Length: 500
Length: 105
Image (cartoon, rainbow over all chains, first blue to last red; front, top):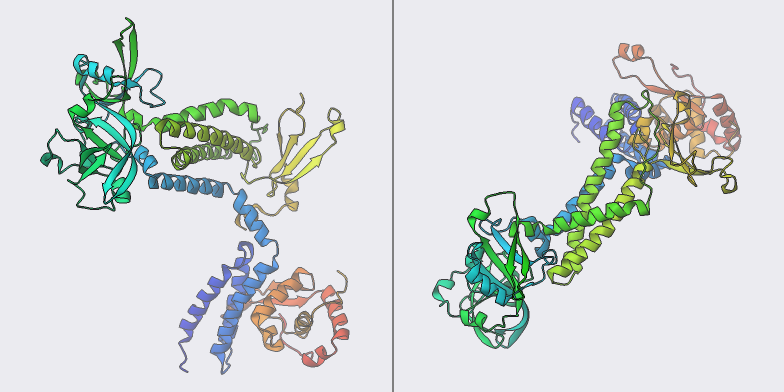
């Protein structure tokens, strides 16, 4: 066996010992590494014939030393898991990971992904959805076809162009005896012109006469029910017993209007004329440019005389605004949760007497920065998680989706706010670690004569938290008590508690 | 600390080696034949239990000899008492590691 140069060996073994030292707990690492290195020098310089084997055994033994030591410490694992749960940085990291996970899920779900991406329509702000007053937030069909026909003639001063559609559930004979039930947006044939989008790849449209009804499949429907058949364009399928030509495939997330649409049926003029004037649906319109000069405006109001001599009010909501609806719903639910919060938990964070020696301005600021960051992160998590849950478990209708999202967002925000407050109250104001070792002090029967409550302690030794069992006029909320330097000897050094 | 009659044979062997003058970790390993993965943790436990105590040798000595300073161990009063009790329990200890004159720091 050839012997390697001594300098190289020493360096290699020193690196190995350094690696072994990382198994040793922080507070003892340096000491162990120093001792191993000192002994290594003597092992290497011992003129033994089997020096290399002895040295290798010594270095391997160092790993066993380190492992045995970490096991021997016994409570190391417990302390590590405690530190993991109680560290403020790890708490924020955990919330951040949750937030990223909920956003990732949102991007995976087609419905929520559409809410996150900008609408693929040209000048989405001037493209509006017209809905009767007080129905704009439910996004249920609220305009009769008769009203649409009337606006086509009379509302040219408000709209440059407008289209009508309604969502219907119909069987589609996809050919070869296969029948699938689809949610179809049955629309007037100018819908794509009003939307001004290139997201519906309708290359075959030019070859199909406009007098024929055309079907544009969503990307998901094309893949799921038509097996991504590239020859589908131009094929004739039967919808409601009527021949319809497949005119194109929409790009993913192309449909951003109210209602779930697996396919878009662009009816010929006769098809729409055949519908009753009372048929309810959605109206999509382009606002006249002189009405949309204020760039911040996303909602307009319109009054139309009705048959009874009165006026009907209609809201024209921009598609861009509509895309924000899930977030507006969340904000509303969060506001409701905030209002309901005082009924579920006390709001004060406790009394923390000013102590400039133990709590300088930077430390006090750090506590509030932690609280604000935690609050923002948890609201972020709840916002996207409520969108995900609504998309996963709600029925297909937009109104139901919104309702489920509101309920989930309200309940989750309430729980999240409660947790944020409770977590903040259970943390040391200096090191922000979770307080430990709750101890009951006093007796309930002597509540008005002596202190009765729970005492928690900061493991680093910054102080005690006294939480009254029953709030009294002289002890209404939890109170923090700073410990002075004379207590330090009974606590572990802060750097040890932080690093284990 | 009182005498621990249940001291393991390994711990007693290490105590005996240190008492005999093998005061460094590696020399204890050499003398006892125990591997490093056993000796160092055992010595740390003995130190924690107050049977031995460790000390780093003076930097000046190590620098003069152009080597890193070593950590050496010595028996405490409790350690000596415990070793006496262990020798009665394991009589072969004295034969395995006879008392020798080695360099003391």
